[in-house]
Image (cartoon, rainbow, N blue to C red):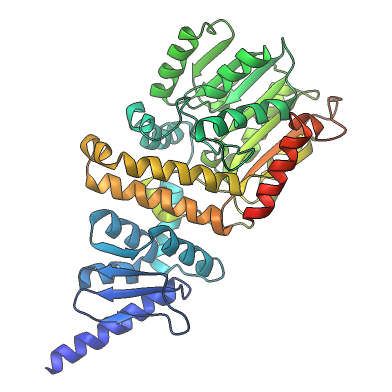
Length: 417
């Protein structure tokens, strides 16, 4: 009896310490033996059921990675809505230092081990993007656009919103027929093909994922665009030549802050003083490390910058920042579509991989959705130009097809914010 009471006291103490590590989130923690801890001042939005004391110890020593891995392994179950639970965690942890000393040490080690050198970047990218194109086909749109969509209204489909995003980028760049474009990090090629087909430009697109490059080349061949879009399997640091436009959608997250000056140098030598460009990337409102679990299991080598950090790319070369737009709510909407499609394909994904993979990706997509909903994650688009560029618009009118679409967009953003 005495031993049982001692273990029960230890359980409750550990549960409270783990809850403290969440910043006091509105979630209930419970062991399978009945011991539990609930937030004192409000009803929990969801409950985390921990299967045994060993898993509880993992959460105590490394709350973030421990939770992610234990959830993926099935040693943790969530009662209630997973996204709501993660929203509560995002909100509470944004104002608290929730990492243990072990988590901070592990995070530092990960940053060193996953450095984005030429060799390291290729290894990091293969971990995520070479899972087979068939996997991504299950839940992305037909163009395989794996970045934030643009929703002119909440009623448009994901397919329509991704095409709208491609056009939104092109209009921001004010592309003209005959111009030359270099794209750093092209995914499966949707943007380069769209630019060539609808705006009459020539594109050189760089990517270090061989599977994506082969897919993009085949698409260019099928669409009769091979003479206008060249897909190159190489690192962005090896870009050479002079272009009118530089564009990168969804690559900056993989560059790493230590390489921003290097990226700036690449952009400068690609554009000179008269070119213009656009960066589209996930960021934050303030500087902090990206999720250790996501870096370990999903995106090795990734880093999500604050806007002031990104200025290190532009300032040494006297680039002018012309426009900054935050599409945070658009990414939340995009992730709602992705998560819904992923869940509908979960059985097929499990057949392709296993149940742990399904739970890992469910947690990743749910966590990203939660982050964009509550504002701990942002989606920035920055338009910039060299000091001699005179192609600077007087207004934003060129971004919208007509006044009504702009009005509808404004009303929707206001209604969902």
